[in-house]
Amino acid sequence: MSPEKPNIYTAEFRASAVKLANESDKPITQVSKDLGINVNTLHTWISKYSSPTDHDKTVRTDQHLYDELKRLQKEVVRLTEERDLLLVPLGMSTGATASQICAGLAIKPGIATTPLPNSPALKPAVPGDGLGHG
Image (cartoon, rainbow, N blue to C red; front, side, top):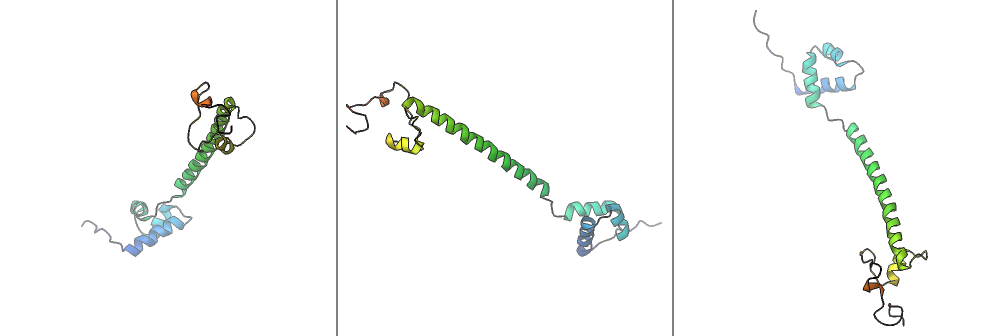
């Protein structure tokens, strides 16, 4: 008895077998029997020639982005509350926005220049309000 010669399948046959296996409602074992090929051969072709399914990765990535958005929204609320608490000792609890307060203090928004209580920055250098208004 001579050893069996391995079958050589064309690229088109392999591609159509993989497509059929992926799109068919039949089990892969049944598809392989219908095509007359070994089930392990078909599994190898599927893993080798199938386009990767990014569906699971997309779901995880979308969930990750949603979680990150929620985390950042909570952080914005927390930082806004912290900023507002830091403005209260300066006597800035008048309901003005941070931009209005910064403009009144001649501070550029976005620069962390909140002076500590009792620091020289809070005491006017000249008589008046310390902002050059008299």
